Amino acid sequence: MRRNTPPDGVGDALALFSSLFSLQSRGRTSLAMLTKTGDGVSMSEEKLIISTAASRDEASRIAKALVQESLAACVNLTGPIDSVYRWQGKVENAQEFLLLIKTTSSKSANAIARLRELHSYEVPEAIELDIEGGSAEYLRWIRQSV
Image (tube, rainbow, N blue to C red; front, top):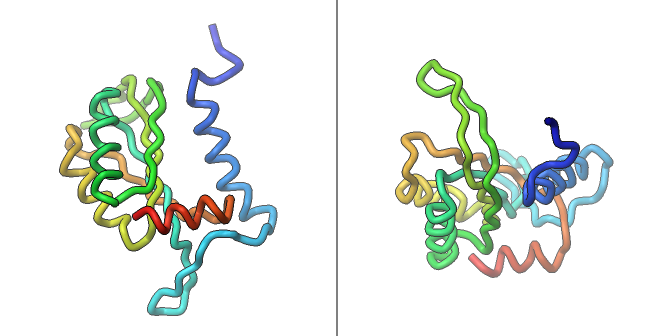
């Protein structure tokens, strides 16, 4: 039987992703801090790293380490979620726990490296997105917290 609503916790993550991606398409002014790269391209200072873990305990352990080590301001955990993926030539499915890691561009590479060290997966998910906008106070808090 199909559900018309996502499982507990997944709706919040979907709403977050939807709002992140729709801000740019509606032409809103970004509240995020922009940084110029060496080639003059602007990029957001605030970052969202998406990852998954095999268990709530593993996700919690990773989240606590990233925050304690000032590599992330905040990590939200949600799940379990159902994941379908291709691994070593076969289609697999598993229940996983989603991590939404808020950090900055200056800390994101180290956060991903630490995530890999702590993770049980051979190839852990680590997708980095620019945060294009949001509450100015919250975005400032992310920058001040790492």
